[in-house]
Amino acid sequence: MEAKLTREQANELLHKYVKGENYITHSYAVEAIMRGLAEKLAPEDVEYWGICGLLHDLDEETAPWRDDFGTHGPTSAKILRDEGFGDPVMENAIMAHNPACGKNPETQLEYALIAADPMSGFLKAIAQIYPDKKIASVKHKSVNKRFKETRFAAGANRQFMSLIEKAGMEWDEFVDVSLEALRGIADEIGL
Image 1 (tube, rainbow, N blue to C red):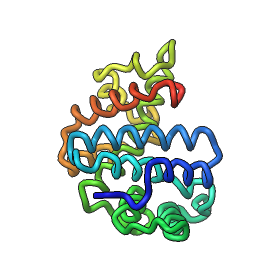
Image 2: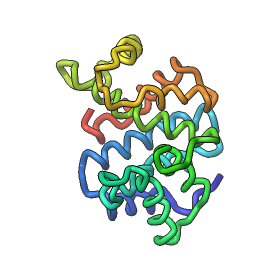
Image 3: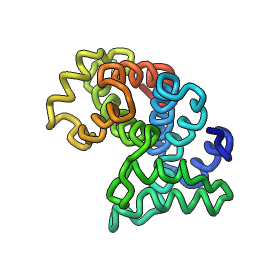
Image 4: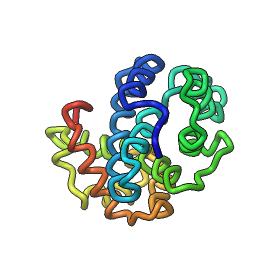
């Protein structure tokens, strides 16, 4: 699937609507994981999946989600349309990463995105407990151990992460793909 916008245009949009450094690095992390997932699950769509990951929180600072969480996702879709980049497949994927907006994941892309979003923060939280705070130090075994500790990184939705299996990937491969993806951009995201 070809995106109506390039990665460069997507990054410009991200920086136009999102100013917080933590949100931007989170978006880069989700983009990297989505690219890694696409390499395994949809090799012809690596760029497209990456852009979906990059823009999944485009409305983070503009949607009134703190008052109505259901606005997170649809506001991003509206921004894309208003900017001339309307794309129903991308819009649905972005909305499906937040089922509170009324859109549940149904496609491989949508399941991948809803899983990748919390995985990025979960891996960052694990890296932060290591002395060097580097993703390179995080081992697969540690991810599985911390996943079972529900009080650790409690905000990382484990149910959503587990939906990766509906995208056609086993949990252990998802962990490996995600770790490799974040290691590939570690300097860019401060890990």
